[in-house]
Amino acid sequence: MKYIIKNGILPIMAVIMLLGCDSFLEEKPKDIVSPTNFFNTPAEFELAIVGLYNLYKDNSLHGKVGLDRYYENGADVIGPNRVFDQVEPTQNYTLSESNISAISQGGGAPLTWQNLYAIILNSNTILEQLEINDALNEDERDYFRGQTLFLRSYAYYHLTNLWGDVPYYRDNLPISEIQALPRTEVEQIRNDIIVDLQAAQDLLPDSYTGDDLGKASKWTAATVMVKLYLIQKNWQAAKNKAEEIINSSPHQLLDDYAAVFDQFNEYNSENIWEIDFVKDVRSTDWVDHFTPRIRDEPKDPTQRSALSAALAERNEGFTGYGLAIPLPGYVNDFPQNDLRRASNITTNYLGFEMNFPYMPKMWNLDQINSPRGNHGDNKIIFRLADVYLMAAEAENELNGPTATAYQYVNRVRERAYEPDMPLSGLTQEAFRQAIYDERRWELGGEGHRRLDLIRWGILEEVVKSTEYRVWNPAANIQPYHVLLPIPTEEFVLNPALLESDPSNNGYR
Image (cartoon, rainbow, N blue to C red; front, side, top):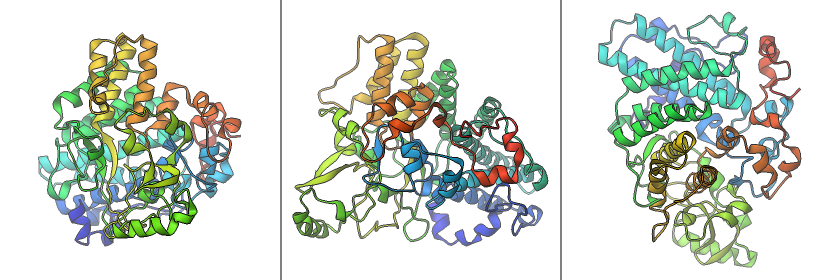
């Protein structure tokens, strides 16, 4: 997909966004291009699929803090190094209908909601056109259907994670009907999209090469299914699907943890799905949130000039924001003998003691090939280590800490310790706690932690025992903070959104 974007198809996005609009419930759609005029050839369907992927690269989703604003902030791994208004409501649990609607800079909740529904809206149009278009052969139709089913399901996956019951539709409805949709129970949506994800898995290829790198494979769809089964506590289904990925996919764990995140090792065998970005064309600045800023460093400010000079000699720079750094408890709790620590925590660079800790697996200091705000680093969404740990968790919940459960968790730990330190002899509860920790060390900062805490039912407990650098989330968090409030502008346009839940997820 990088090849396609580099060669100038991005300007056609206005056509691809068939029914895209600033708001899911906007009164009138803008600049609609008739689908019958657009969908005539396989190339045009391919452009439409690329359009859906590009929506996922928006700042409100995977392009900036976007989704990570809700999946990482307010947990126990990362947080900002200073007061920052754009993450304060989620980090500090001071969310309300009004302030969540105001947080749009950098892709806040209203834009997240709107862009996910734009993906759904456009996906429904593509699926309808696939049914009536006779220009495609069977293989082409299956491929485009698999891609679209996955991308639509992935949108509903995030909507239900963040808001629970949400408007749900699967057909290409008139705008007037969409504007009046009530909320549908979350379990119905999840059950339906699991069916769609299985269909996508059956239709999509194992892997991609060349121009198609960055697209979701059948194993991407399977990974989302595992996550949904864990949310539903369907342990057997989660275990079966995770084992299918482990045993049948082409993905393998790398021997070196740091190599997973190497910017020159993208699309490696461990990574199941990466959102691809391209410097100067479709770049991202999510990297900047993990990268230090020189005004904060080093700990001894009299050495700042010396640090700047040392960085410049390597064509590097501390030009980031420093807004996603390891929390004190993460730094203190992370085992010193764990080889993953160096990728997740650094407190010294080039011999200079840092004022703050940083997560180097996520930063990019290269000022030549990856300058501030113009990074081409792919965003890793899913990788195989996550699947191994989910398989271990599901087996433990089913049968306790069996040899199979140990096999999966210890496979991930093999590269973390030298000599090896396999887990053994644990009770079911102790194994459960070990999985909580193992996911914290293995997947820190990668967009999984807060949802993990929510599905384990321990978010409030963890927040109240976590030390934060700014604000006081422990004093503010409430049980209803496991979901977001629907943005004000949405239920103003569509009062039906409040009919089934006048409290707006507990925020009223």
